[in-house]
Amino acid sequence: MCGIVGYIGDREVSPILLNGLEKLEYRGYDSAGVAVYNNTGMHVVKSKGRLSVLSELLHGGTDLPGTVGIGHTRWATHGAPSDINSHPQVSDGGKFAVVHNGIIENYLYLKNHLIKRGIHFVSDTDTEVVAQMLEYYHQGDVLDTILKVASKVEGSYALGIICEEHPDTIYAVRKDSPLIIGKGESENFIASDIPAILMHTRDIYRMNDGEVAVLSKNEVEFYNHDKEKIEKVTERIEWDVDAAEKGGYEHFMMKEMFEQPEAIRKTISPRIHDGKIVLDDIALTVEKIKDIDKIFIVACGTAYHVGVVGKYAFEKILRLPVEVDVASEFRYRDPIITDKSLVIIISQSGETADTLAALREAKKHGAYVLSIVNVVGSTIANESDDVLYTWAGPEIAVASTKAYSTQLAMMYMIVLYMAEQMQAVSTEELNQYIADLESLPDKVAQCLEDKETIQYFASKHFNAQDMYFIGRNVDYAASLEASLKLKEISYIHSEAYTGGELKHGPISLIEDNTLVIAICTYQRLFDKMMSNVKEVKARGAVVLGILTEDKVGVQTEADHAFFVPKIADFMLPSLSIIPLQLFAYYVASQKGCDIDKPRNLAKSVTVE
Image (cartoon, rainbow, N blue to C red; front, side, top):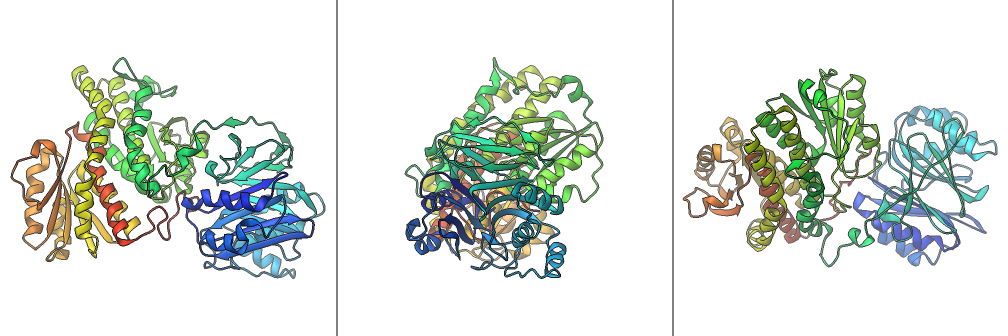
C-alpha cells in the first residue's frame, strides 16, 4: 500500500518522481504529491485522485524545477482522501517534508502533546505528526533529530524526509515497512519497491528495521539507532525492466496469468534433481521433520487460500494435524504452539504486516518457521528459520495470479520433500507425484489455451448481481480463491461454500438464473457434487461446472462445462483456478472495471 520514491542528483527531479510513482500505481492509492527543493526553497504540490491529476498540475514535471525531491502515492488510512491529507506532509514552520508508508499507532498521543505546545496541525493524518515532531525536536543535526523522533514513534513506517536547511540531502528511515535505496552514478534514489527506480539503476541496498539512510548525490551512508555507521553491500537486480511492463497485454493481470506456466517452471525445475525434491539450503533436518507434531500455515488473502490447499495435502500425505490461520487472527487467539510446531508463513511481498506479526508470535513460542516468499531479502525472509523463494518475478496487478500458482507449487514441493524424509508414501507414489508436479506448467498452459470458452461464458453473465462457488475438499479451497478473484476486480458479490453446506442455509439464496460455479474435479466426491448441482438447479440456478478431462462426454448436471487435465488430487487447484482467474478477468473487463488497480485495494498491505 502507498508508494514512495525520492531522487537526488543532477537531473530534473519532478519527471523522475512522476515516472517512479507511475510504476508504483499497482500498490493502490487515492492521492499523490511531491516535494521538491530548488533555489527558491521547498515546494509541495499534491492532489486527490489519480496520478494524472498531479502530472497535469506539474505539466509533466516541467513546472517544478529542482534536483532533489520526494514523492508519494497515498492510500487513505488516517483521514479521508483529500488534497490536504495527501503526502508529503510539511511541518508547521516549513522546515521538513515527509512521505510515509505505514501506521503511527500512538499518533493521537503525540499530536495532543504537540498541540498543547502550540503546534498547528492542518491534516487528519498520522504522518503529519512525524513532520511536526521533526521540526519541534530539531537542534541542527538532522540525523540526531530523526533518531529522537524514531524513539518516540510506535508503529510501522517507511519515511522519506527532506529538510530545508540541508537541501543537498535525503533521509530515509524504515521499521516494519519496506524501503530500498538505489545507487546510481552521481545520483541516488529511495523507493518502496524496485519497479519505481529500475529504469535508472539495478544496484540497490535493502534497509533493515531501525536503520537510517543519508543520501547525497555521490554517497549513501547508513546508521543504526545508536548513530553507529553501518556498512552495507548493494544487491544487483537481474530481472529486466520489461518484466514490470505489460508487454503487449491490455492489463498486467492478463500478462501475469499467461506467465504462470513459466513462473511455475522457474519455481520447481531447479528443485528437482534425479527425480527427487531438493529444497535449496534449508536447515530443516530429517530429525527436526520427524519431531514435528503439528503444522500451522499462516497467511492473508490469496496466500491464505494456498494454505487451505496445503492443509489438505499435508494431512492426506503426511498424516500430520494442520491448522490454517488468517494472519490477522493468529496471534490474538493465543495459539497453542510448542518447539515441536512447524509454522509455514506465506507472503508474496515478504512484508505483509499481519503475517510478519504472526511470524514473530510463532518464534516467541519456539516454533520452527519456514517462509514462502517472492522477494529476496524481505523482512519475513530475514526473520524466518528457513525461506523458500518462489522466483515468480514482479507481480504488478493487485489481484494475485502467478504468486498464487507459484506458492501452490512451492507448497506441493514441501509436502513431497517431507513425505520422502518421513517415508510417508511408497517410492512408486512419490515418483508419480513428482512426475505430476513436473507436468504442471504444461497443464496450466493447456488450460490457458481455451480462454475464448471462458470469455464467451463471461460475456453472458457479467451483469449478475450475485455468484456462488461450490466445491468439496481441494475444490472448496479453489472455490475460496475463485470467489475472491471475482469480487476484488469485478465488484460482484460472490461467496464460496462447501457443497455439503448448501442445504444448511445458503441454498435459500438461490433463485431463477442465479449463477453457481461448481468445481467438480475431486474424483472421490464427484457424485456428491453432482447431487449438490442438482439441488441448486432445482431452484433455478445456472451452473458452470469445472471438470477433469476424463468427464468429457459423461452426462453431468451442469449447464456449461470447462475441462482441465487430470493430475494428482491435491494439485488440482493449480488447474481448476485457471479458468476462474480468466472468468473474473473477462467479467471485470465487460463491466469496464479498473482491473489492475481495483478500488479500495492495495498490492502490499503493510498495516494491520
